Amino acid sequence: MKYSKATNYALHTMLHLVSTAPEQLVSVHQLAELQKVSPTYLSKILTKLVKAGMIESTSGANGGYRLSRKNPDPSFLEIIHAIEGQASLFECSQNHNEGCLIQQVMVQAEEEMESFLNNKKMSELASEMKSGSAHSQ
Amino acid sequence: MKYSKATNYALHTMLHLVSTAPEQLVSVHQLAELQKVSPTYLSKILTKLVKAGMIESTSGANGGYRLSRKNPDPSFLEIIHAIEGQASLFECSQNHNEGCLIQQVMVQAEEEMESFLNNKKMSELASEMKSGSAHSQ
DNA sequence: GCGTGATTACTCGGATACAAGATGTCCGAGTTTGAGCGG
DNA sequence: CCGCTCAAACTCGGACATCTTGTATCCGAGTAATCACGC
Image 1 (tube, rainbow over the protein chains, first blue to last red):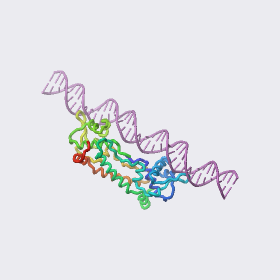
Image 2 (cartoon, rainbow over the protein chains, first blue to last red):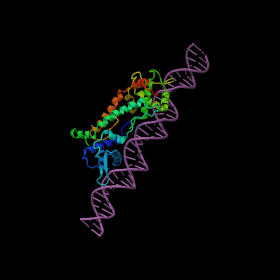
Image 3 (cartoon, each protein chain N blue to C red):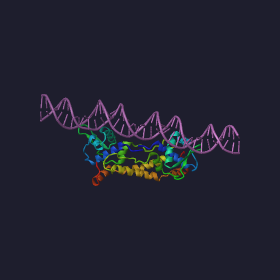
Image 4 (cartoon, protein in one colour):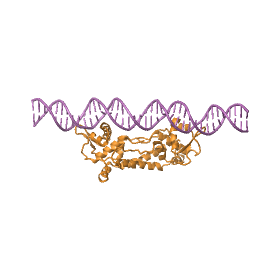
């Protein structure tokens, strides 16, 4: 079990967008350049973020992406869910009666992590970057 | 990102072993029967648990598996790590200077979950099963 | 100048290719128990 | 009764086969700004 690279790209992209002027449009090309990833692939990922309502896209020349006016400061959890999906990390595929104790424990564990990620906003990192030590991009 | 079925099998197997007499040997065939999974596949999974020191195997006729005398009450985390590996759930493959803030957040989140899973022992579930409501196997 | 069309710079979506990992299966090898058999 | 052999019941390990998913590319379509050109 591992988080996908797509999630990595999405998080870094969001961090970059949060760190730039809110109205500023950034093209996929620039975002891909920073992360050394193919623009076409990154665009697929960003489309998911658009559909999740976290960023807005403007097409045509001088187009690009920027933060959504509503929801300008998403949490880690929102971004991860947008990419990885909402499904539970653990699914007991057994046919024993509902209420598998193992499943319950695993869901609780997941909730612990998600609660943490839900309270962690992207903007926190952005301000850390400005005040803190060197951290490229 | 999802936990593998193998982890599911491993957890259910451990729960069964914890619930039976400590010295009792249980064959792969029985364990596979309970979970409706092929014995040969389950044996691959159990081998990992053996190598992790959580269960012992006895080969030959009347052979089978039982809990390890040392470590008779493993935690969820130990079992999961034995199957899924110890690696971090999130690896920032970017080349920016060490100390990626995103990576740090993700690791913290993972630690939240792991701390919970580390405190959750298999025996807790076993005793819940005896006292609590119906829960097959 | 001023519309009008062409070009350019973008995003968007589907189809496809490729690689890796999860999920199983098959088979042969080693190991222990126990039964059968001969002395 | 004793010891030997042999078959049965197991685990173990490697080598596959298959399926799903993640990763990535390619191409065509749509869209908006800008440029060129003719009037």
